[in-house]
Length: 77
Image (tube, rainbow, N blue to C red; front, side):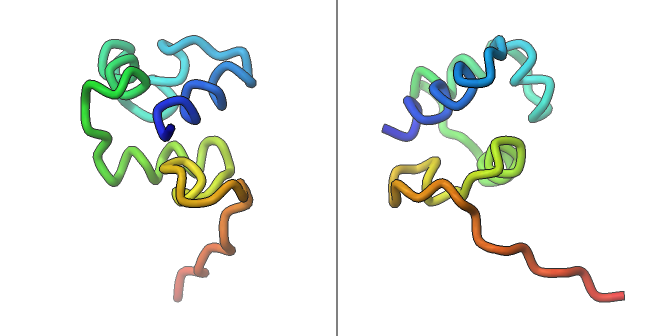
């Protein structure tokens, strides 16, 4: 399910795998392997995907159907 969600979010924005890979700082081949479920997605990439699509990681991995991410913590000065 989680791999379908990252593909569906990409396709909803009419983005290619190449463009999506650049947006999250991975190559097209790597991104393709994530969508097909043949490579594990590192935590930092899950975070980049969530930020890019403005969805929660829980949504991306199928733990919830609610897309809205929780509020982010503010950085301390």
